[in-house]
Every structure is written in structure tokens, then in C-alpha cells.
Image: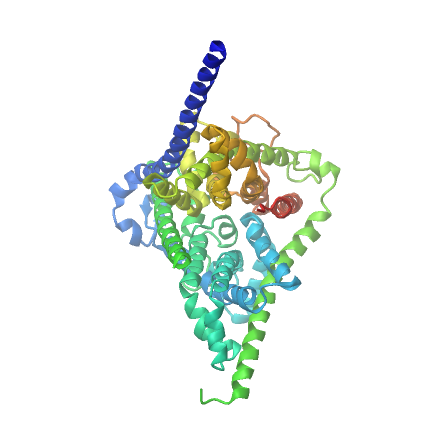
Length: 303
Length: 281
């Protein structure tokens, strides 16, 4: 009896120790995720220090990027990034909102909605390098013939082509979030509007969209964050020149594509660190956009 | 509402038509891409394509065996690194909903999820590649693991949150230690959600190219040594698609089709797991 009791006590001590180890390892991993992100930021800041010190704010509005003579101005890339992202957003919004309204309001169920939902998920699943590849061989000739018709220099590649590809890629983000948000509009609100004699369109315009407004906005923000950081597809079709684009049909470069192209070639410290500073800017901008987006969603869903 | 009711109904109908039109139009590019990749890719895929190495420019034929194996290895090691961290992180977040650490940890996960993949590549370059002095498959795996982590953490957390607390209480009331309750009761109950999160994460990173550019780097030869540069499917597609040679374009089309099929398969498996083992109480 005595022996039995001892074994039992020993075992439970071991269990308690294991339990403590388990609990502390959970905490440790949570801390390590936090540390990982902080270390990310710190690495970027430390590595871009040489260029921050040497170039200061001139880095942001300098109009020439010429590593051969050690001039690093990122205005062309900032402009390229903003142009491609916002153009892509502009193109994608009618589509993503249509899908959100279609799936959230008109037809939440049915075979076609299932099909559409799966198609949207598939759009998000296709790797960006495949979009770039397809764009390079199919979209570029199409855009080139369009440019010939319009009478601008027929590069084919350029800001416009990248925006088209990006627009396709970011549709799913705003669409699926918008659908969730539109679904959460209380039926009683819609019914009240119907009972006042509103048509379906009026219900959507005056009840559904105002109610889901912040959710739709968050979806657009997340799409924007995605578009800003997208690398491969853009790199393949944008043309990769460091000259400031004069029109949307000109080739250009975005911050991400310049890093992808030149990072392994960067020989001097200043060159490398100015590329990393670009990465740092990209990181900070997308982080801020994503956090705002998530905050908006959270507030919307807890209300 | 002074307008005519017919006008208003007409407006309503045409808006509906517009929404349906845009929704259908949106699926068009997807099918164009799928169609084009399948049409261009299918003619190049045969047994030799899968088991041979790429031939130098000028010779026809050749395959993508190095990229195929490389991709599998890189993704496998990434999953091995990310899964334990992801699941444990998810358990922590689902168990501690309101502590300050879980707030910051959740924020970090959001930040990681939004981080552009190219930035992950840069950071891992400085953490692994530069100290070791060589590009390596291992650094590629670590970069991809960082990208997998937030997806796994989030899906684990969301799944475990859905489980009723009575389940945990029952286990604890029987005198089970906490780790056994979590690992033997709670985790198996949420198995489908956790698993589908993992598969989804693998599908998401299998096509990633940008973080591999400065880490795994690519390699025209066959290697299984993870301390050496290694080729992967997305890298091969990128390098060969942007090259001026037709033979290489052909290899890239075949590789694109295989990558696409792989990702499609993973997505279908995710769908099936979530449907098959749906948590029901």
C-alpha cells in the first residue's frame, strides 16, 4: 500500500512538472512570435542605416536612381508602386463589390454561387509567378495591340499591364471580406426598408451598403496592402526601368520589383542598404495598412 | 420617391444585371489563365519531363526533376519548422484570450501575415544566408516557414476557440494534467480545422517565389543537400519565363502546369478535410 502511494505521488509530481513545462513553452512560443516580428523590423532598420544616414529624406524625393554613379532617389519607384496599386484597386473594385453583393445579398446559395465562390478562392490560390508568366505571354501582346490603336509607344509591358494583372490578383481579398460583411446586415433592417416600398436596388444602396461600409472599406484596404507588396507578377510585366513613367503605358518599376531585380547584384554597401530601406518602407506601409484594416473589421464584427 | 415605380423597378433590375455581369466577367481571366496554362503545358509533360534535368540552351527536351524534388524538399522542411510553432502559438492564443502577451502576439501574427514576401526574403538573407556565406535550401525553407506561421496560428486558434469549454473542463475534472487535455483531447477534436489550416498554408507557400530569390536562389543541377542552393518550381518558372529561349519557355509552361495542379490538389484536399471532419456537437 505504502509503495503504491509513493509511485502515485511520484507520477503526479512528474505530471505537474510536465504541465509546467508545457505551459511555459506555450508562453515562450508566443513571446518568440512577438520577438520574430520585432527582430524583422530591427534587422531592416539596422541594415538600412547606412543609406538613411547618407541620404536622409532626399532618398524619398530624389528623381534619379543610378547605382553606377551612386545616386539613389526612389521617387520613380514610389510613383510606380502607387500608380500600379491604385490603378489596380480602381479596376478591381467594381468586380469585387459586384461579387460581394452577388454572393452576400442576391444569391447566398445555389450551384452558381458555389461555383463563383470556388472560382474566387482559386483566383487567390494561383501563384503570382504564374500570373506573371501568363501576363508576359498573353496580356502583353494584347496590351501592345491596344497601345498601337491608341497611338502611344507600344511597349506592351508597363504600368498598365501590371495594374491589370494586379487587379485580377486582388479581387478575392475585397470580394470575400465584403461578402461576409454584407451577410451580417440584419434581416430586420432590410425587411423594414422593403416594407416601406423600397426596391431591391434601393435596399442595397440605402441599407446594405451603408451598413457594411466599414467592412467593404477594410476589404479594399487589405487588397491595397496586397497590391503594394506583390512582387513576382509585377516584376515580370512592368519593364524594370528606373526612369520616371510619363504615362500609365510606360514601363516603370515598383519598390518590390526593384528589390527583386537588383538585390543580388548590389555590390556596394550603400546600394544594398538603399534597397533594404525600400524594403523597410514597404514593410512599414503594408503593416500600417493591414493593422488599420484588421482594426476596422474587428470593430465592425464586435458591434 | 417621386419617381415612377416602373423606373425604379427597371433601375433595380438593371443593377442586378450589372452585378451578375461583373461577377461572371470576373471569372473570365481565371479560366483564360487555366486554359492557356493547360494548353501550353500539357504537350510538354511526359515521363522524361519529370525525371530529367533541364538541358542547356539549344538542345530540345530536358525536364524539371531538380525543381520538382527541390520544391518538395523546401516546402517539406518549411512545414516541419512551422507546424509545431504554429500549433503551439495557436493553442496559446486560444487559451489566453485577453492577456497583454496574446494581444501583442496576435498583432505580430497579423503583421507577419501582411508582410510582403520579398521583405521576408531580405530579412532571412541577413539572418541565414549572410552568416553562412552561401545561398541554401535551408534558408529558403525558413523564409517559407515564416510565411506559413501566421496561417497555421490563426487557423489553429480559430478552430480551438470553437470547441466548447465543457470538453476541456471534463478532461481537467478527471484529473488529467493540462498538457494531456490540450494535446490529447482538444487538439484531436479540432483536428480537421488545424489540418486544413496546415494544408492551406502549404498551398499558399508552394507557389511563393519572392522569398526564395535571395535564399534558395535556384540551381540548374540536381541536389538534395539543404545547405546548398536548390531549384524550386516557382523559381524555375520565373527564371525560364523571363529568359529569351523558346526551349526554356516550354520547360516553364510544363512546370507551371505541374505547380498549378499541385496547388489545386492541395486546395481540394483542404475542402474535403473541412467537409469530412466538420466539428459537430
